[in-house]
Length: 306
Image (cartoon, rainbow, N blue to C red; front, side, top):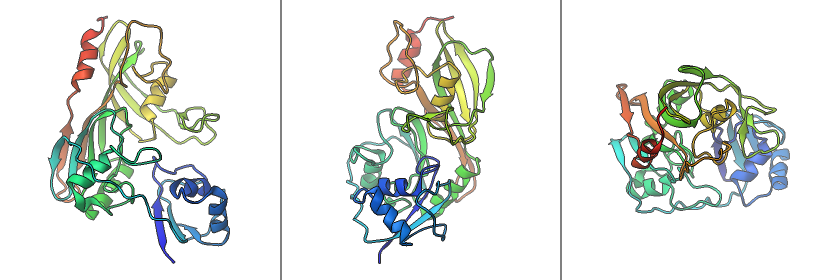
């Protein structure tokens, strides 16, 4: 009988029920059908049988032996990519705002992965079937630098570096208001919102440690430009922490309450500025930088100085 495997990451599956995760991954089967597969012993987590209610953890490996529907084929699309670096093992991409990283429910086209399988067909089959080569991601609304694996050795080593927190990420963010200190950190645990499960929050029944460091780069009358270094990599971590601190990101329609203001933002002001890591094969340390996009520079030029 065919077998498929899934690996749980902070961005996909962590803290979800086993049956809920499987029904989301295998959309041809309902949650009750997935529960029957689990009850019949056709599903194993790390080689062991678990109940449907088992809460998945980062690093869990799920094996399921059922007649699996074919995964939706990823359509190669000739979408231009801005490549900062590339060799036979990795690609470093400057992702624009508005581009989703990988296909998902309701978004099968126009993603970074659609572009990758067009320009680099050998990336197919590397890692998750819907996310070939993807070892981390940026939100759709976030622009900036990210790394993609092109070889199995690079895929495994980059995942290890991310898990061990050996990769440094620096973001630039414009937030509402003036922070009380020039630099600091937020260490509020976050998880799924107690009422709105599609959102992350510090108000959660299943908190996971989350640490975000910041430094004020420039102050405006109504805003602050921050350099941000996330120590952990939880979903929407930067957005949740700044919103909880009372300084939501400019343009954040999901986590930020937008004050009545003359300023209007067409996008989220969050940019992945620097990515620093050791090359997964050579071991050499590299720092890759994505300059602030012109539309974000334009926003800064329009702001009133303090």
